Image 1 (cartoon, rainbow, N blue to C red):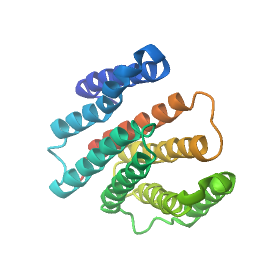
Image 2: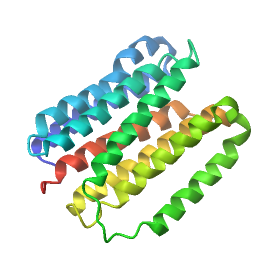
Image 3: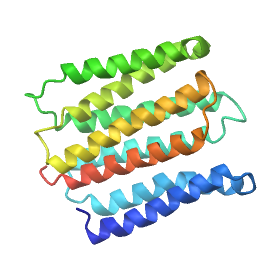
Image 4: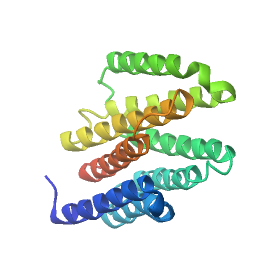
Length: 224
């Protein structure tokens, strides 16, 4: 399934991810966390730029913006301990990243794909999550609500690619979108409900896998 180039990048990528998980979990290595965390997206951006010549220029640019906004969000969230303002700016950065992905996914929307059942499941999932977090949201109620709606839209538009792109491309991107939802859900519960055990590991692992699968999936579709 993976070419030699993809295999080589995957090994490097997961070494970086493992390094980040270690550095963010061991207090004596926390200083390296400021290098390893952004390195995850930097490596993905570099790989995407060197592997996307076959993509439509507009799609390539939009995906690049999604990755850059994600990198910005990663950097901003590293400084939340200094000021809560960084969380809001990080939220905005990821909101923009999701909007870029939505536009990318809509470029291969299958008009014959029925989204209603999946949309209902996604909304039910969001409603349960929202109910659990509600008391802890406070002033973040409206920003978080908007963010949740946007990431749900991102997942739905990923779902709507089925039948319009190569099956492998669809499966990887859709899996990535679901993992992105899961990562953001864990982050939200950890922040607005109660601290979760090993949250730093589960959030980063699901997030890194999400971005990896989305990028790999977009690159796997040759029909542009």
